Amino acid sequence: MELATIRTGHATPALIEHIKVEYAGVPTPLNKIAGISAPEVKLLVIQPWDRGCIHDIEKAILKSDLGLNPTSDGNLIRINIPPLTEERREELVKVVRKRVEERRIAIRNLRREAMEELKRLEKNKDISQDEDKRALDQLQKLTDSFIAQIDQIGRDKETELAEV
Image (cartoon, rainbow, N blue to C red; front, side, top):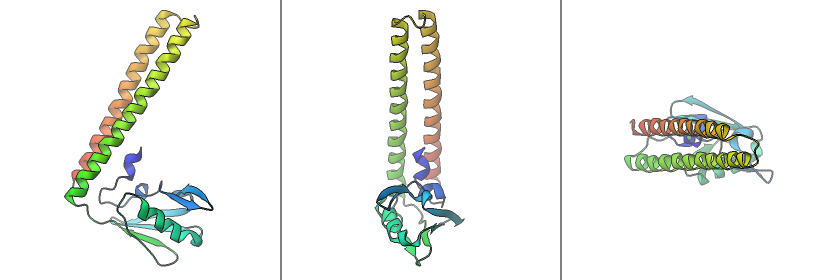
């Protein structure tokens, strides 16, 4: 889930690995064109496999909404992870809640599509009313399970953001 990309003051490669970098004219995830490591709690190191794309990587990191400032020595890019201010923590909590809600909506849309397919199957006599009912119950349980997981992940991330 995208919540791993929301920084909490601790360096983790998941924070930046999905940033899209313009590489050979194609937006490419950073982890596909460079090695990313976290040698210290507050430091990320990016080692591009093609040194010619260092500038593009720096530009992509600066354009991301993560508030990170990369520095380069021509071979490696280092990113110091600054401590979060209270204001930034509150902004990130809002981002977490928004992303959690987007995932809930996506799950409900998938449920709706599955329900429509089940109704179509019942209408065409491919399944019985009993099978349709059982499938709808199972679908609702599955939906509830996924939404509960997403809610828990969101709560965990909010707790992580609240830690100083």
